[in-house]
Image (cartoon, rainbow, N blue to C red; front, side, top):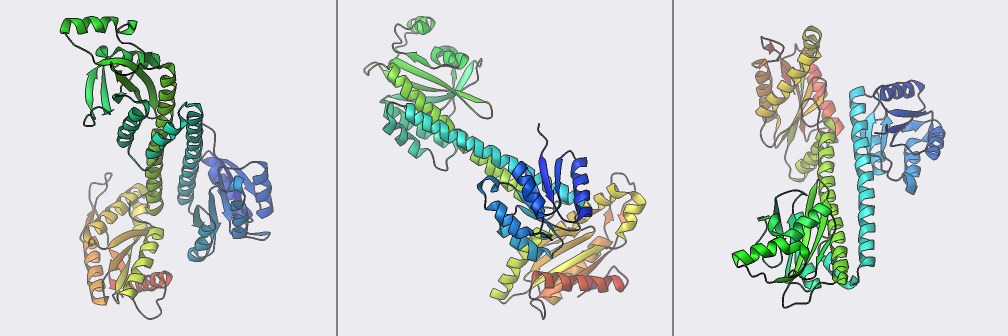
Length: 491
């Protein structure tokens, strides 16, 4: 698999060298660029998989450079991760609005930088593969339309299956519309793998109630032949075609009268290892299938498979995007929300509090002397303790409350509809819960005992007009709690 190429543009030699070294040590092909001009020069040579771009550089404004890059079609899909020492609310809003994929503040934390780089590379690769697959799908649809003798009928069939439908719904629509276009009484989709003794009918025009009917492939030689050969099967007359010699003998013994005269079996395969046959049949009182009918049926199936693949691809892409969004908002160690995600929730809650004349509180919780845990028992035990604290907080809060990890051994709790008295009481409950809890670790026999200091800020309040003001007020209260001896709550 090719190594991802990352272009790092920064005028700070120390930052440029450290980021380059960190990424190279983790297996990436890194191209350093000292400044904006060097960045554009490297982009012209070869477009990277990811660009790490400093916002402030002497020879270029990073945001203006970002806008210029995003203005060119060939770089529009390039994911850009912005680096800046500016306050995140000032820099991130501007850069994200111009098309940046993410923002990270200097001085960066190596693990966080690597995690965000990996997330953006995965997203970039996913989007590129999706675009290519969609392009191939569109080309397949165009070819199918051009090759079909009855273009109007084909477009009519495809028109109904290009919406937001599940695969099973697409199968049902396809058999119905294809049966009408071909003028047949029997049309079905049968799923099986080459060599399987049985197959499953997932959709049938002649019986819409059939969705998962199991059939023996020995009784349907046209299905078996199409699956094993991977080629279309045209049977103009069941009474004379050699494919049915053995089956006709069985029909005679069992006294079975088959009302079908002519058959087309078209094999197909879909992503994720799904194989099947598109089966159309005509009764004895209808005209036999001709090579022209086979050609049109092939065009329908080719286009149908492309539509189904696109439906699966869109569904998979949406699921992957949801997972990436969840990762972007979640602290990897504790699985709590991170500060970025909580900031968005606080913004919304502050607007709600003002609109409905209500109150809200923010608790900033810091574990006392946590450094001693890492120094004495090691960081693995420290990580176990942090996960345990996260679970304790999650179990203590109300369903309407939100808990997040601020960083290190600090946690945040957002309490909607909570005034000063309620916030102080709740903070004391959390403090007591931490003090009374035995924090276990797989490597320790005896549970650890810890305490926590809690700072509380309530909104609305004087001189609190933004999320940063609220954070500052809670942080100041936490500082007082630490100064007053720790293991206490301060407002």
